[in-house]
Image 1 (cartoon, each protein chain N blue to C red):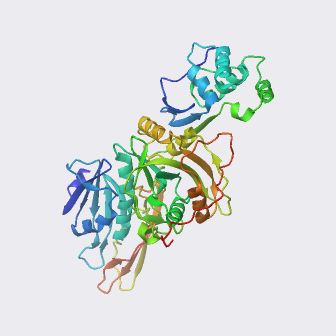
Image 2 (cartoon, rainbow over the protein chains, first blue to last red):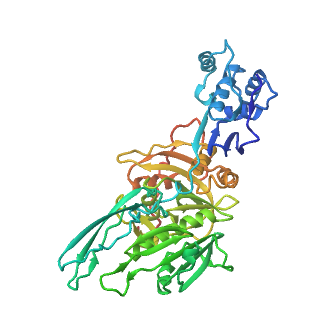
Length: 196
Length: 300
């Protein structure tokens, strides 16, 4: 198999012997450790797996083991960084590859690692203003005439205003408005709590 | 937006901060004076009336009719952001949104949600989500002698240096309680004024009773951690990657781990070297034997 990376469709930042890849399709960013990065760089659609294994051996002093390359390819595929499916050939098992690496020593540092995050939206990457969501329900003055001392309760429905607080989320809300009848026979709106 | 434009606007102004162009208008001129201390750090009058974001503040209050109170309304462009009987609430929403818009529209600066202090000529950046304890840790580091840069944003330039964004520190009292703002001087500290190269990235979160036993991160892991809190990560990924890539090269140290009380964590962080070449096989950061205290004569 000659694996091929989606290198034309992603953004790549080299950081020493590691690589950070940003996929605009999924808005995910991936950090490739040196082993994964080397496999990624040489997955050009022309280089066979055995040759990539030899490269790993020369550059990183790891065993020239195709099983290690397949491990890396599987991790890269899980991250969506390869074109086409990756099918491990029969006879090359993950367990065998790990066993051979263990014999070579220093397994943890040699294994290919791909760490992924989802890039935040702008709203996710800021501090929300706590307690500042307000319900945009509108007060409706009672139509009926009132007698001094009367109290009218009027629940009205609205939505939490998004604003700069992503926690508001435009979810439905209800504000109960209270009207007190004044001595002149008019309704007066009492102070209202419209916090979501 | 046309409907908002038709309202009577008494006064307004345009400013620019880190390349972001902001306009503010209000139905009463007097309220604009209350905005002056709330403007983003580094604000200057804009040379042009063309803005990226326009705030429109419609003042309510007593409507001249008995028993009638009108809401204060705040619009961000055409969207209503606040509707409240308390003007202070509307101004608080405006202030918080101002910082966000600057971060969003800054042209040559990359804003990362993080606390920042200066220490030994390098920036210590603490990326983290809201509620992770950034402000408490920044305050503790300032009390221990570090220079205050920000408790909200690390502002990177295209050389990877970190610029100050010294807002008053916002201390959270509880999930639903208003935040308490305190100038850095009230902590006995001072704000930085010059950009600094990045020295240390510390990814940490407060956990009661936690012991500070961080693991060392590689520069690429540090870049990923910073990217995960970058405001324009999705909108400008190429700019974000290249800027952060420059920032984390050159032997920048990076750590990750839970921390306990802020004071203890601050002393440990400031005790660490701010330029190092971490061994990726090492699981824990080393600690020097001698712990440094506050600067002589600082009174902290």
